[in-house]
Image (cartoon, rainbow, N blue to C red; front, side, top):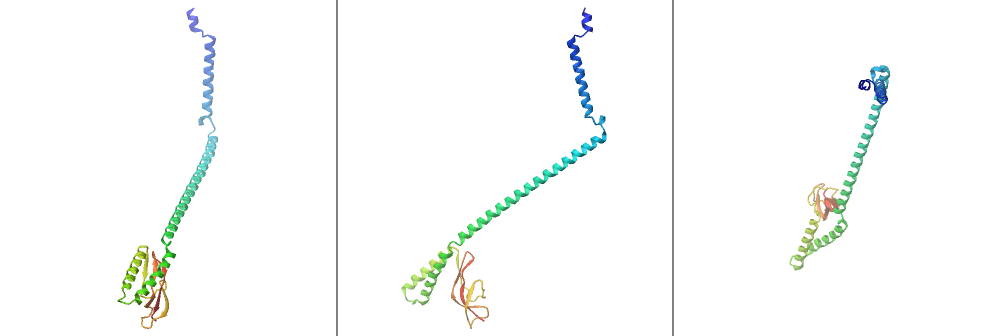
Length: 199
C-alpha cells in the first residue's frame, strides 16, 4: 500500500508538475527569442544600428539644447551685469555733478570777493575780513571737488581756456593774462579760464 503511494502521484501533483514544465518551456522560448545566437545576425545588427543612430542623434540634440541654454544664461547674466554697472555709473555721475549748477552760482561770489580784494585799500580793515571769507569759501569748494584753473604762464589749452584777447608781451601760444579764473568739478571742466594769449 505504501509502495503504491510512493510510485503514483496524486492528480494535483501531476497538474503542478505539468504547470512547472510549461512555465519552463515558455521561459526557454523567451530566452531563445532574445538570444542573438537564435536570431538572424543581420537583423539584429540592423536594428542595433538603427537604435544606436537614434540614440546618438537624441544625445546630440540634447547636448545642443543644453549648450543653447547655457549660452542664453550667460548672455542674460552679462546683460544684467552691464545694466547694473550702467546704473552704478549713472548714480555716481549724478552724485558727482549734482552740485554743478549750485557751484557755478558760487563762483560768481568768488569772483566778486576777488575783485573786492584787488580793489581794496591795504589799510582797510574790511579787506582782511574779505580775504578770510574768500579763503574759507575756496576751502569749501575744494572739499566738494571744485578746483581752481589758473593757467598764468602755461601753454594755451583750448579744452580748459577761453582766449578772449591777445597779450603782446606773452610768448606764442602761452597764457599771458588771466582775466577770470576757471574751475573744474571732480576733474570735469565747470568753467573755462578767460585769458589773453601771446601770438
